Length: 337
Image (cartoon, rainbow, N blue to C red; front, side):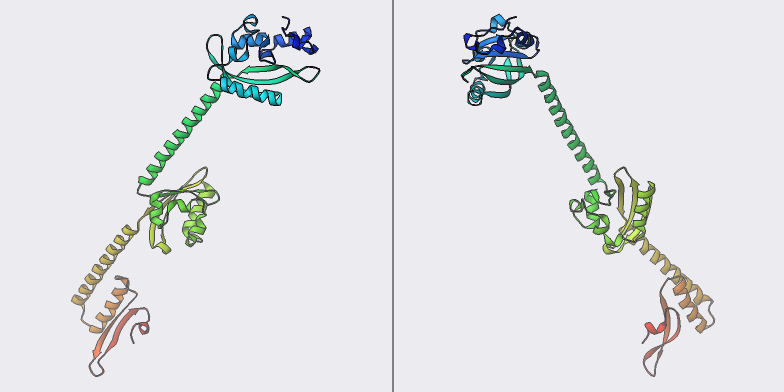
């Protein structure tokens, strides 16, 4: 095909070359040449493949009448003005085809000048990017869906962790808190979010050198699960901790057993007191020596009752003071004036 061009292109000999004409004809992109009034002068095979109109149908038509929808006229005028000011423009837009299908195109246009430097036309290269745009849209929708799904799953997981009665926190390999559930914040009397990003040893310095620290570091080192029962003095907290190594660091579940511990201690104290009273009663029944009874009673208080010190005194009627006659455990002088 010989490229059609108006007399105004007579001063562009490179465009009249048969060699260049064949190149343009065989390019798969649409190469469209217009005159200064945007009337189509040349329409290659690529333009026919993309838009559907033949060369005979397209040549002689104005660009905006053939290739611009009613909705796209304003953008077209903006691009033409840009072209007249700068001599070129780039654009991505939608355009109609002969069949009525709307396609996405990428357009690169440059001015054609005559020997006097006057603009005599425009050469544009158009690529059909419809498939690319559809792929981008699908990717955006997929990413949006994935973002929503990740958010939904994260909320579900957080909800689960916030509903469990145990405290939970995760640590990275630098011993920084990655996450703490609401219950963990309640156990340590702090806002869970405020601890995220902080180092555990700096937030809870009393752990340094403790058996708990040894457990954490051992699990991080050998990847073994550990269970630990301990007392954290700054919070008067008895707790049971389950440590699970993970790819990020450690997952830790903490159960506040302070109430349980206090109840157990109370039961133990009551049992010891019962055993102590029972033992004293048995001694009284068997005793035939007052001094020996008093001494053994003090010993039983220490051994069975687990008291730190026990003593028995008699009232000195002359002085009105109690005089120790038997004791066991710690030095009596610390307790009796």
